[in-house]
Image (tube, rainbow, N blue to C red):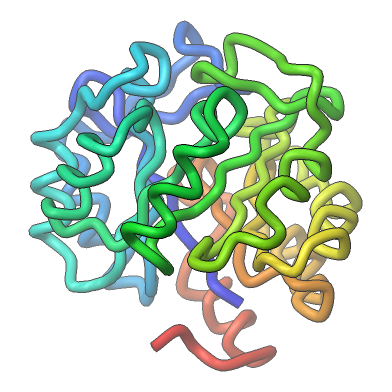
Length: 248
């Protein structure tokens, strides 16, 4: 199971938010590419990026910082936030990103997700962000009527969808532990591999998610705990590698 360190970008800096609130940020670095190198040196096999400004504005914003991060590390990098059209998908994958994450557009234009998967099979990830059991969109500023399982079911037959990232917004950046129950329920309801996100604060939280590998959970994303020191990335990766094969 993968442990994927998160780098959230706002104004070109590496920050972390609490529950997605743009006004509640902690700045960790003015040079996010240096954080990517640090996590790679700790053993990370993938980096998770979020263009926070892009998610709110509905278009790519932190492109230069993303370019530097991709150039700085030799491992796959995935990105979500503000990707609403094929031009953005093309530009990001041409930049060297391995995966792009489609969230808001999956709710508002499901056909676009299918188009993207057809053009780039194995490089598209579905981002499902939930608040109080409902899917949130537009940088978590709006809530839809969809349940996460309902959204996932729309793409169950979609060949080329690499994974689903499931985030519990109420736990994101709060270091309260991942919503293991909701993550498990989603993984069991779909054949698409699931990546857990939101709330992982220490090694105990990692160990709670590990058994869900049998249900279809392939990895977990963590951010604030790494920056605040609650979770040692190298230690967490070693714990996960004892349970399954490493990503090639």
